[in-house]
Length: 111
Image (cartoon, rainbow, N blue to C red; front, side, top):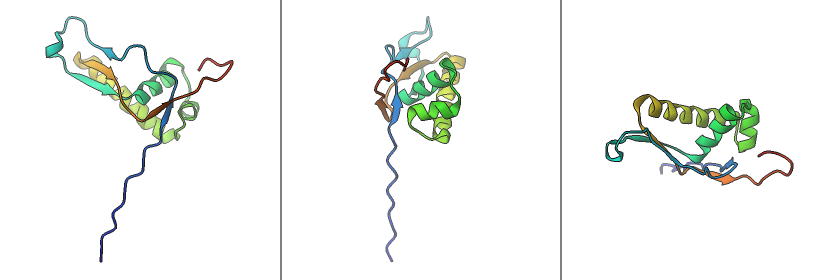
């Protein structure tokens, strides 16, 4: 009897508003060669923006990103964890990668 091999599901692209103008932050006064850091995927930054900067509830933010509420909560939790670790430890934050698609602008709406 052969064992069935299951392939993992492909991650659905998460909708984001735009590529951020700045993708690297570091604490002042720490030499780059001594710097540790965290990486936040672009969809993590988008979740932070929607929930914390825009103040959207999780259901609305999930709809904007085109994911389920549970997936949005996981993305947001991971991004908040990374930012908290970086801030508490004096680490850098790099925003890069992820599984995303740039959301087309909606006429008459702020994004």
